[in-house]
Image (cartoon, rainbow, N blue to C red; front, side):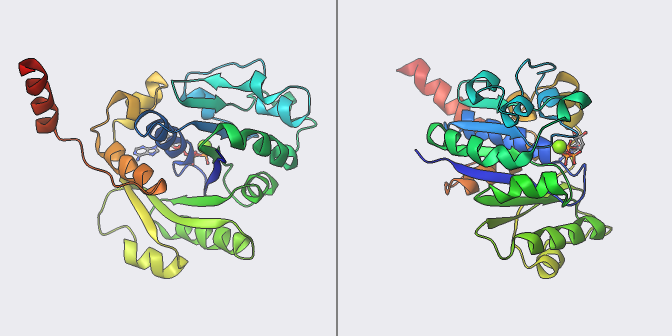
Length: 257
Ligand SMILES: Nc1ncnc2c1ncn2[C@@H]1O[C@H](COP(=O)(O)OP(=O)(O)OP(=O)(O)O)[C@@H](O)[C@H]1O
Ligand SMILES: [Mg+2]
């Protein structure tokens, strides 16, 4: 197996990269049975571990990048097929860390994973561009507002002369009202396809509170339905919506078997 490295990137911060990384990662692993690892590449303001209830790790990405620890030591086995490599939450742990060493780490991980998701830092600084450089594909996340979308135009510009394949744009926290840019306007401005429109979902607050991906709490919530479709798209499968009725029929069949 030669794993794909997919970068979840954005110009603007706080648009939902980590939320999408953990939910799509969980869905690919536990719904579609893929071997998945998510790596926190937002080294200066890391959140991945916190979002998953991993509040302290003795071995983090920081120590791997410094050459002090092996990848195996840093892996958290989160669920059956999902592994996590958090970054450190300590400022002093930033000393001596350079994202440029990430290439070697990824090469060692490819054969053990179908998909490696990089939860990127926002913007176009060294940290964000560093992780982009080692990715095969990139998903740009934005809210449907001009400033956030313009940052995608700039981010796309930064990879245009590279081999990194832009998969498209994920619109997040969408309200579908007249104050937002629509899909067509965003596609025209960015010259990229919009591959998912994830609605603003108030259930996200419960997921944050419990530090558990919403996909594992409530698969029928509206944002997760869209992320199920996105995950299927990423692996070239067709997503069939789970209907309550189908589940009921399955149960009845079992009883009469
Ligand atoms: N679809 C959604 N509906 C409602 N809230 C959301 C949605 N997506 C993300 N959020 C919330 O928005 C906030 C920011 O999300 P998140 O941390 O994933 O963004 P980010 O792009 O990773 O941020 P950063 O740039 O700081 O890394 C979080 O509180 C998260 O729960
Ligand atoms: Mg984040």
